[in-house]
Image 1 (cartoon, rainbow, N blue to C red):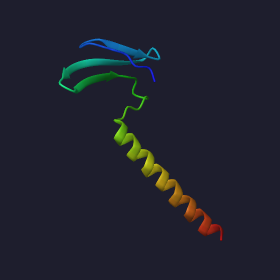
Image 2: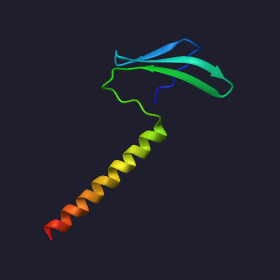
Image 3: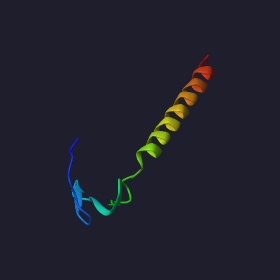
Image 4: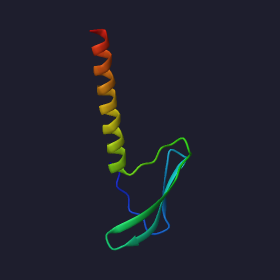
Length: 71
């Protein structure tokens, strides 16, 4: 993991096309802005993990149905 220090209105650029800017710092909360191409999905980590779990469950369900059809 790369750890960087940034101040309000400073940014980090990733892969020449994703920019993360510090918009606001209030106590222990930081508001960030993310500029990325539309084809690059951006999720909060807890949402990403929920999506990944739902996709995994769907694949498992479809695999079980496919196995039942074979038998």
